[in-house]
Length: 296
Image 1 (tube, rainbow, N blue to C red):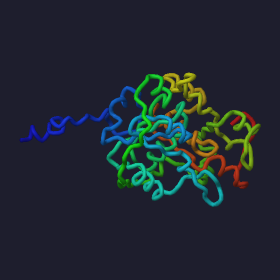
Image 2: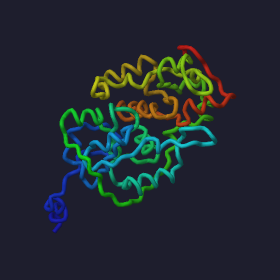
Image 3: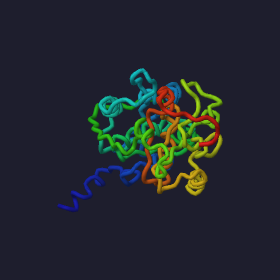
Image 4: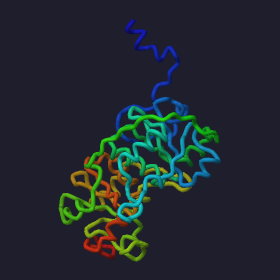
């Protein structure tokens, strides 16, 4: 009887989960191919334009615009929504429950997918996978693409905010100059220096190192994460090491999520926070210091 219970799913032809573990991670196209309809997976298309989704998408994937994850707070644009709002989006609209894997992809490995990946990590959801190479890698390998939409039923999703994944404005202000903390500004060098920028003030948070987020990727038509050894060298050369508490930020929080994911889940850094308020919030508060130029 015990043997029958253990092997009953196999007797019914149930598919095994395509990847193991309980932590956010990168996955390759070969790991996902053939398993998109697995009941334990929810594949989410995070490409910038819904029209790209309409033209063709990974089978069984549901579309979500990353703009759903950016709302105004106290008049400041592009801030993080509250937990209850996100839970509703994940459970009722994406049909994701706490025991399922969320498999995310976007185009050219842009930060749309990692924006949701960070949000899920913040809510304590560990079963998160980002497709390395994104839609272009899937399409270049001539893997299946469809136009039909999945039939989904509402589910319940409950999150538990993990404060250690986020740095608020006050936390950063109180830790400026702390030798155990390193700030990483992932914007373009000209935005970091203050030569360019659309916010109220230009420049960067004093002491922040500048590592442009796209330096973590390689390739032209297909943009995928660099090898681990290359990534480690990029951060080591800027003094970003595993013994420090790392805080990443950008203009609105999206690009920083890519570097957060890289440091925390590709390289295994133990202490990483994302400043979700981002430069759009910091620059608007004229009581906070700002530095211009290419030096931290």
